[in-house]
Length: 325
Image 1 (tube, helix red, strand yellow):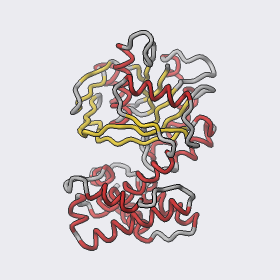
Image 2 (cartoon, rainbow, N blue to C red):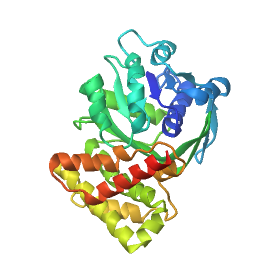
Image 3 (cartoon, one colour):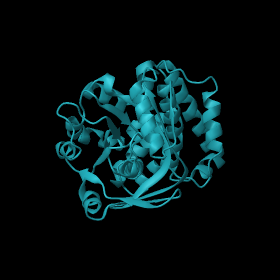
Image 4 (cartoon, rainbow, N blue to C red):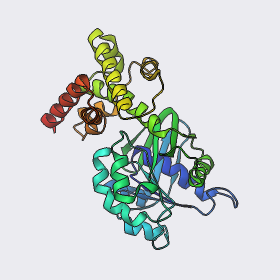
């Protein structure tokens, strides 16, 4: 099995390192025996990875690997010894939404007739981009639940008890390639679930993260402070209801109690929790607002669903990001 990880930050660096470590010690007859894992990375992070390896500091254990890594897709394809035209068996796509246009060309050398592309990205828009560029038959749906970050070049820190991947075919079938990927994840010790309703799963995460990420970023306050304010709590729930209405208008088969599920998840979280969008905005890094709240607004406009709270939060974050960039 040949696996190309596009993006070696917190998510890709962590899951890719688990796969690479397992492949290194895989015994004959196991899912990752003979597998090769390579990373597409850039800048100082790439240079440190090549020189000193990739270090992982995790609540589940510390380890390091000496990765195969390049900033060029063609070079990575050569280092993974990909047969001409076949591509990698699995392309694990873990970049931020705003970085996707910049990696599509490099992915060309890694995608072939046998390739499955599994994006672990926030939002939903990237599915259409990938299907248009590489063909819908190559694209899976996926998401992950994990708290992890690139704390310095060459070092990943993973801090959450939860660190799982949910994925599946967009049409809900359980195919041989999905089973092979699941076996590879199992061999690497990656908790995972194969979903027969992955689009609904992705929308449920988008509904949650658009409200949680959007409102904490707009307010620049932790989740508990947002929910502790009566108006903040009301706006939060309205954002959830707007996103649920948009998903249903788009034909997504959400559970009947989708709003209650999202609110229960929210209320069960640490009140001190902040969102990655909030932290990125505070640090004057690019933010994913267009892939989260902005996506809800766009889909709402497409399907005739009004989204005033999502739209207001989108505008507030864009204005803050533009003013502080």
